[in-house]
Image (cartoon, rainbow, N blue to C red; front, side, top):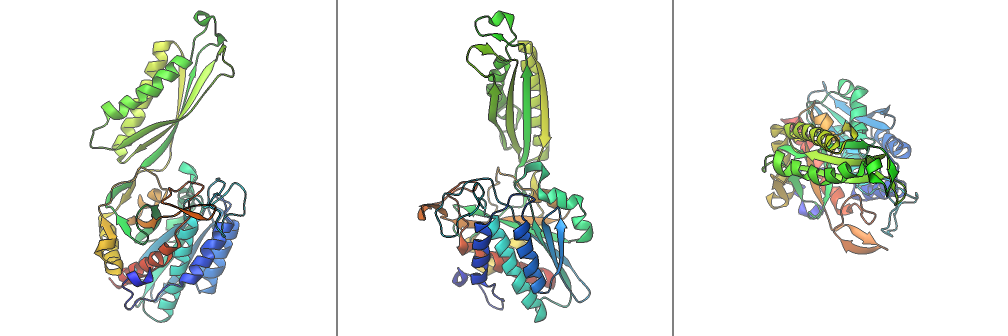
Amino acid sequence: MIGAMNTTDLTLPDEAAMRAWRHSIHQHPELGFHEFATSQLVAELLTQWGYEVHCGIATTGVVGTLRWGEGGRRLGLRADMDALPIQEQTGLPWASRTAGQMHACGHDGHTAILLGAAEAFARLQREGRLGDSGTLHLIFQPAEELGGGGGARRMLDEGLLERFPCEAIFALHNYPGVPAGHFCFREGPFMASSDRVTIRFTGKGGHGALPHMAVDPMLPAATTVLALQTIVGRNVDPIDAAVISVGRIAAGNTYNVIPDFAEMELSVRALRPEVRDRLEARIRALVEGQAAAYGVSCEVLYERGYPVLVNSTRETRLAVEVARELVGAERVLEGAPPVSGSEDFAFILQQVPGCYLLIGNGDNGFCGGEHLGPCSVHNPHYDFNDDCLAPGAAFWLALGRRFFRE
């Protein structure tokens, strides 16, 4: 992939080192807020390269700061570090050695990319090729996968931006199915909010043969599953995106007993904050209506998770320009379609202008060591594509040089 990039006047990242770091992190995956070995590796390498290193933010978060001259402009770059509770089935030589845990979302690759850029940034700074002054904050974040209580919010709550102020901040994520090393950008809303809703209908249990002596909570639960889809179809503007998915229903223990209660859990997503509010209001009203219609009581626990991720215009346009200069316009998609997945970098973008971008992960599925083709993240056959390492790190370098020279 190096050959596909415009590397003129660019200090190249160490691709072999990035592969080694990535494979090591992949072999030893760690779940959210338990990335102790990963954060130790990150801290040791940053210290070796001359960064001012701060550990223990949100338990396992690490920030490396490189400052020169008067400090100048302040840039933040972020990578996530956590793995998922999934049993790996790739059969690759560097497959997870920890049962029930694997890097099924590519955070091992994101961390290796930022480490590769960190080493090269340190070389550029020593050579005086980052301008007269500047401050670079490299943020290695834990627990992106933990929903609304994820690592970005914890780091913010513990003073991330007060301790390490940034004028602009950027992050990337791999995207299977897009050719490796291609870049995707979108101004404005790019990734959906993600909320978790637990609904509980409580009636009166009884014998399955005597339903008239019970108050059946299964009926409102069943009708609610279908009625929820009318919210998206009839209460959301057709040009807006929204998702309501019922992921779990639980009620009863055996076939001939009407249970006391029925419970369900929903995943609710939107790409605009006002649509998110509308979905919550309509879900609550619908559930209360169904409960009243069938004579049961109801409870709705509405847990707001990640907000809508919104990229700022100036920073996104800067990133697009840098990517085009680096890999060519034919490998850059501006105005990429929004994504219904969610990302806790959205919390950070609520406080600092910046851009979250995607880098293509190509064909990356494996089974028994044999190639399967494109494979979604959060899949036991997924693997991060090492061909993304060099373009990803080179992009961070090119972006940093452009930022500090503006």
